[in-house]
Image (tube, rainbow, N blue to C red):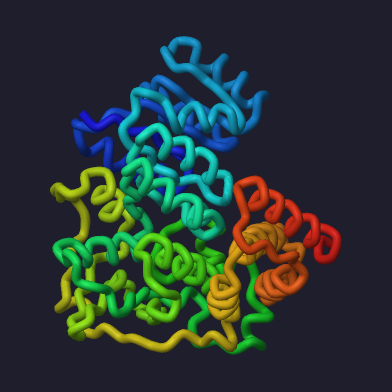
Length: 382
C-alpha cells in the first residue's frame, strides 16, 4: 500500500491525482490540503478518510472541523499545518499540487523527512532550485516530475544511463493566441485567455500558457531537474500537444514521449514509478491525428518566454522576481484591473526594478516575492 499526502487536493492536479487513487486499490490517502474550498475538501475527506487535513485559514479550519466531527481526521491550518502534513510519519510520497511559492517550505520539510516528491509545483524549483536539488541529493530523495513536459523528458531518459543530453526539446501548444500580433492581443479579455485549445487546467496556468510564461517557468524547472545548461533547452511550439517533449542525445538520436493531452498519465507515472499501470482513457491514434507540426515560438510578441530566459541567465533572485510578478499580474488580469499585455509589461518592470541577490536563502527568496508584490501594488494596482 502506497501512503500518499496531497498538497492542493481541490485543484486541477489534486483532483486528477485522486482520480488515479480512486481507480486503484493500493494507494492510501493519509493527508489532504486545500486553500479555501472546504466544501469539496469535505467531500474528499468523506471518501478517502485521511488522518490529517490542512486548510489555510484558521476560521475555515474551525468550520471544517465542525462539519466533520464524525470523521477521525485531524484538521490543522496555515503554514505550520502544511509543514506538519509534509513531514508526517505515515506518508511515503508527497504530491505538491498547490500553486505558487507556498509549496517551497513544505517541499523542503518533506525532503528532510525522507519523502518522495511528486512535483507539480513548478515555482518551487523556479525560485529555489539552487536549494531544493542539492537538498534532495543530500537526503537521497527522488524528485518525480508531474508536469506533462517534464514527465515526458524524465520518461525519455529512462535507460539512457550515463549518455549525456545534447538538447532538451520542450514542446508548447502555443496557447489560445498562437499566431496573433500585438494589436490583437491588446483586445483579448479574460474569457479569451481561458480558452486553451488542448488542455483542461486551472485558471492561472491557463493564463500562463497564453502568455508563454508557463513555458518560461518550465524552462527554468527543466534546467534544475535535469542539470542542463540553459542554451541546451529549446522550446518548440507543437499545436497538437501529442509530442509532450523530447531529448536529443550526443549522437543525434531523439527520443520523445507521445500521448493524448491528459494529465492522468504523468500523475500516475510519478505515483508508481518505475512501474507502469493500466490507465483507462482515450489512446493515441496517429491515423486520426494525421499530421504533427512544429514551429518556432514568437518571442517578440509573447515576451513571457524571452523574459524567462533573461531571468534565468541573470540568476540569483531574478527568477523569483519573474515568478512573483507574474503571479500578481495574472491575479490583477483575472480581476480585470489590467489589460492582457500588461502582464508581461509588469514582469519586465519588476525585473528591472529589483535589487539583485546572487545566492538567496529561503528568507531572502520570500522577501524578494514580497518586495515584487509591494512594487506592483504601488505602481500598477489602480
